[in-house]
Image (cartoon, rainbow, N blue to C red):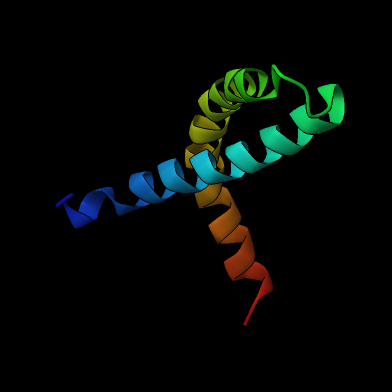
Length: 73
């Protein structure tokens, strides 16, 4: 088991992975269509997307949490 203190990092890792997988898949499908090289192109786009998404979500999440707290009751 992973210690609870790492929960925000694990959450960011998983959410960024799933979100970048979905978004890169849709973007790749729209860009090149459903052809023989779709899977490889999608995985290449996903790896790049995830490398950007994970540090972004770790950096932005605390700011977004504070903003959401400020605008909700």
